[in-house]
Image 1 (spheres, one colour):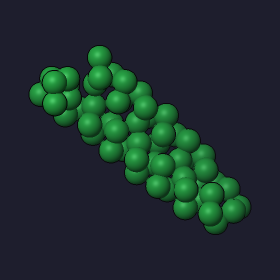
Image 2 (image 1 turned 45 degrees about the vertical axis):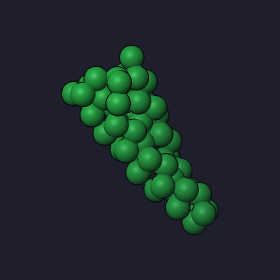
Image 3 (image 1 turned 30 degrees about the horizontal axis):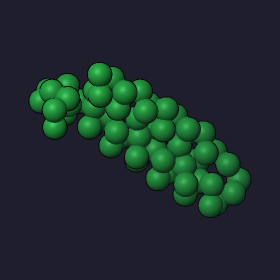
Length: 56
């Protein structure tokens, strides 16, 4: 189940990051870029768990 949870979290973080990057505030844009990268990392972790199993 960890695979699915990581992929969902990743998708949500990536979407929220993309929305924040549309802001006029430079701090919010930077935060959004970081959140999008975090989301991509979570999605990758979910893929790895899917291949190796949730025991990692």
